[in-house]
Image (cartoon, rainbow, N blue to C red; front, side):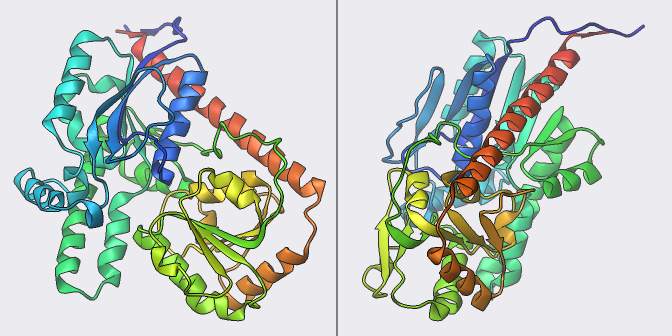
Amino acid sequence: MKTMKVAEKTNMNILFLTTIILSKHCNGGEVASQCFIDSLRQSGHNISVVGYLRKGDILEYKKQKTLIVDERYTETSKSKYYSLIWLALSFFKSLPYSSAKYYSLAYINLVKKLLTTEKYDIIIIDHAQLAWIENFIPDKSKLIFIAHNIEHQIYKEHFKKTGNFVLNLIYRREATLIRVLEEHLLKVAQQIWTLTEHDSKYFDRLGKLGKTKTFAIPPNLTQSQDKTITKCFDIGLLGSWSWKANIEALQWFLEVVYPYLPTYLSIHIAGKGADWLDSKYSNVTYRGVVPDAQEFMAQAKVVAIPTLSGSGIQIKTLDAIASGSLIVATPIAMRGISDPPPTITVTENPEKFAQHLVSATKLSLTHQYCDDAKHWYCTRRNQFHNDINDAITKMSFLENSLV
């Protein structure tokens, strides 16, 4: 006879396994992971976070029980000979290249030690690239998988676009192998957490209905909304310009939108990987990595987000909304973001994109716009916390089921 008792324990002991720990030079994926970690901690749960630190980076956000495996390169272009090691390892272990980058005995041994010395109520695998660590987790009944994207679709998109025969083979292999990992985690995990309804519906079609949950990631949870910031330039763009989809977006903006913009407008571009912009355009200033992404966007009269491809949610879109600035974005940039505030205009037509940017620079940003953005931010943040608590409560019920 099966009976269910109400979970008495509210605070859970959680092991959070991720790829890269949030640090000074972070990207959107790391910010999204930290949103989950922060929400779980704010709810009173005891979180142990395991991951790598980007090589040469500075850990500014270290919290209690953040365990760094070691420092690691993450970008192939800057990884020296490590890219060859990862490639060899990917074939030896039949892993995607993007998974081999994070595979190590040090990671495995640390997880084994933690599972031996601690009792965890929940174990979270963050990113499909870490699917291999599941082999070293004996109890699958405690497992949650966070899928930031449908990873194999990204690589499938890459091999469709490339005309290079070798790259085509590499992307095909990557798409095939990472799809196997995604589907395996779908099978063994008790819950699948996604960032968009689109991704959730995909996993629902493949797995058990109700196993997948969508979480509306909020903007940076620690950013102050009360700081007054002076507008310093007309148009702002922010991104990690070493990432393929962001490079494509920046090139589209400069090649087909920029010609429609008057040269008297000041354009500031921030983020690593676009050093080639220096002195190339008379009214474009390349700022490199800025200390505060939201402050940079708040300094712009209007933020341009010209994303053309990719999946999952864009953290920079969320932060741009939270900054209170006006925004002109493509439809792809708004994926996973429902009911945005009126500070946003959406178009994928280059000429209209430019026209909306020009119009936005002439508008005075009213208190109502700012209040709408702040209200949207607070509502989304609160919903995110509530959804996290509901999901953890369900796992707690499962753990306390008696046969």
